[in-house]
Structures are given as structure tokens and as C-alpha cells.
Image (cartoon, rainbow, N blue to C red; front, side, top):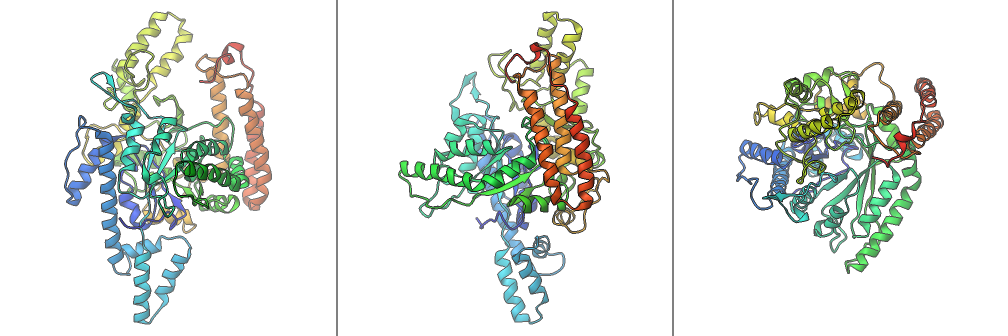
Length: 604
């Protein structure tokens, strides 16, 4: 496969649901842009392998559900297909003429201001035909693809069953997904998100591609998605002890993101980035010490110097100014942009109806819900077909999902074999149990609402692509944009979005859009209020110091932002401080004292 580059652009496109970015590499990798494919849904992956094989004239042989090691083999086959097709695209791009609208011209016109872009501009100004041809030939060789990265949500590690009997751990969902990537031909990265999974992390060390070869080169790299410095150090040490190196720490805002959100108890993005900036060298040195020791113990060649370590950030970035401030102020290597690309049809999979809903979405249309069966806060679109279907099933007296894929079948409270809490079978059992308990209506009502609120996100997040391509005409697509979708309304071309990211002509944006730090702080304040109310209703049990710690974290973050604001322009600083003052008052007014019954239990 062709050499790939992770640094031609200073942004990447993170994973979006299961379907939105399932084949994004086929749209952007040829332009040097890295993107991330979800490995959750191997049924969708197999459907997309069939779709693209037939469209591109590639041979296709089905890997059926009941075939041996089907999940891993499907993933390997699909990733290999992506790699082959992207290589084919890049070779065609490299051979295209340097003329307006050609593929190679698009490649260079979309680059940021780097030496490579300057070399291209210099070539355009050369008049001597021979010299121009030599420069063009060199530029052709430097037009290399972006990375085809993959995402494994570590908590989605459902054990596999066959005939009612649990199979060996390596057939569990996350384990099989990892094996599928590890055995593929790709030289790229796996993004590990949702925290530590010891058996998965330990399993990685069994694959040579994650370990340095004789020249110290890693064919496959590890990216950790983290929300704070401590998580990066703890997970990084766990991996380093197994001779596994973390090549990138991908910092994501705990709540100002899309999809599943991971609250960080009041820790805000700015202070987190400051910590990484201050302790970056120590992080690399400490992890390298552990890593080198593990390599020596394993009898492998020593890596005298640390491999490259990138620090990037994503979550809520909306303007070129914010991007540049993050890169320069915190010394970051790149930024991630996800939600805005939902309005770029040539990059992501969005059916026409959903595209219209997303472009018209307001802040009231996007909400941090409890609909995920993982019981993790989840950004949802109120107007999505998935939400409409959930409400309709309740109205028809058939609440719950048919649960066709069962990727989130993890609950054992009511059944011997794990079941999904959004499934019809679970909802029926749970509602019956609540009715039999005979609790007063005011106590049982919020519990019923919570049961009925769960959605079939694992299946419906594939609906955007299966409906669009006619694979499943009855699909009811879900959407999980971040709140930033309300800032954008124009359905844009790739060049327009890249111009927006790099400081060229910007896309039209909402006039009252707050600074990304202010939005994140606002979301956290509202989340804390909601958590306190849930605890008051008995829907949540927290340790006594949780709410006070959350509140203190927000107040500390506010003081940090006051100090940071001196680095803003005068125009930006005035509005920022005004918003900060209002939020400071809001945090101070939040009552955190609760009845002892609401905070007596463990964190859940």
C-alpha cells in the first residue's frame, strides 16, 4: 500500500456514529485528510464491503454471520478493501494534470499554509516548461493519502454466544474488532475510546504490528481518546508495561462533543489542555521509561528515543480563530472536526431528509439525552426518524426496539443471557416489574420515563447510510451531532469547509454563537443541575463529595478562563468575560446540598 501521512493537514475527521463516517476515507483520504471508521457494526461493515465491491468491480464473497470468526474477518476484509481503493484513487490523482478542477489541483489547493503548499504555489509561478515539469513530478510523489484510522469503543465488548454457550474472550466484540484491524494490511492507527479495558489492552500485545520492528518502526499505532491528563498517564502506563506505545493522546471535551459524552466532574477543556502543555515532556519521558523496560524484558530491540507523540484536541471547535488559538497557545499538533462535516454530503453519509433536519437544527433540537442503552449521556436530535420511531412505538403500545443487532446487549439484571435495555424484551419485563412493585405514581413515573426513553442507537446509527444506498429502505436513521450543529446551516462542499477551518472565506454561522469554552462551561452547568435533580428524584446515587467537587471544578475553570482571556483580542475578550460572569453567578447559585438518601450510595 502507498505511504500515508498523518500531518499533511492540521485537522482530522473523528469517528461519527457507526454509519456517518463508515466510508469517509474513500471521500477524503486521497486529499491527504485522515479520518476514522467505526468498527462497532460488522453487519454494516459487511453491507458496505458488498456495496463498494460491486460499485468498483472488486470481487466479493460473503462472510456470513455463522461463519467462523465472522466479525474479525469482515472487518479485515473491509479495511483491506478501503486500502486498495484509496491507493487506486491516489495513483489516479498523482497522474492527473495540474489544471483547474483536477484531482491533484484539488489536493494542493486545499492544503494549509505549509512548505508543501508553498512549493505548489511556487510551481504555478514558474514559466519555464522544463522546470515546471520537474517541479510537478516532485509534487506528484508528495501527494500521499491521509490515514485510514479505526475506532474501538472499549466498553462495547459484549461476550459472544453460540447455542447459548459463551465463547472464548477473543470472540468478544472489542477483541474481535481489534483482531480484524490488527490482521489487516493497513498501516494506520486504532483510536481507543471510552476508557480502559484491561483484557483488550493486554490482547493488543499479541499482534506484531503494534510492536516496533527491528528498525523501531510501528506499522500500527495507538491513539488514546482521553478527557484529562490523569487518564492519559494511567492508560498509557498500562499499555507501556505491555510494550505498547501511545502515538497520540486525542483530548476530547467531556461534554461539548457529539455522540456519547463522558462527563469529567467539572474539569473543563482549557485547564486540561494547560495541564498537557505543562506536563507533556514528563508524560512522554515517564511512558518511554516504562516502555523501554517492557521491551527489554520481552527481549525485543531497545527503542532508545521515544516514538513520535502527538497531542490533539477535538470537541466543539467551530471557527478558524478557535482552532489557531488552540494550536498555538497549547502547542498542539492538530484538531478534530466532526459535527460540521455532517453538512458536507461528499464526506459523510446523510440521507436527504436527515440532511435537511440537521441544516435546520437549533440548540433546542439537540439535547443531552439518556437514550443510550449504555447509560452514558448521549447527544440526540429530537427530530430524527429514530426518535420519531421510538415515540411511535410507545403510542402503539409496543415500546422498545426489535433489537436486530444486539451490540449493546450487556444487561444481566433481568435475564441470564445479556440483553439490551432498549430492546422490546427488556422494556416489557422492566415495566411489568415496576408495576408489580406498587410504588406511588409520583415515584414510579420518572422510572417508567427512563425505561421508555432508551433508543436503538446501534442499529439506527447505521440508518443514515443504509437508507441512502437502498440497503434498508425502512431504516429510521438516528443522529448524534454535537450542539455545534446549531451554528451551521449551509450544506457545504469540501473546499468550503476546509476554507472555513483554515481561515479562508468562512461558512455562515449563527450570530449568537458563544465561544467554544463558554459553550462547554454552559453545558456543564446545565448537566450539574440535571444531575442534582436526578439525585433528588432517586434516579441517581452519588458519593457525598461528587456535586461539591463538580461545582469546585467549574469555579476553578472559570478563574482559569479569566486569566486566559488576557490573550484574546479586545473585541473577543469583552463578550467572553461578560458570559463568564453570568456563568459564575449561575454556578454559585446551584444548591448542592441533598437529602442524605440521595447521596448515600456509590457513584453509578
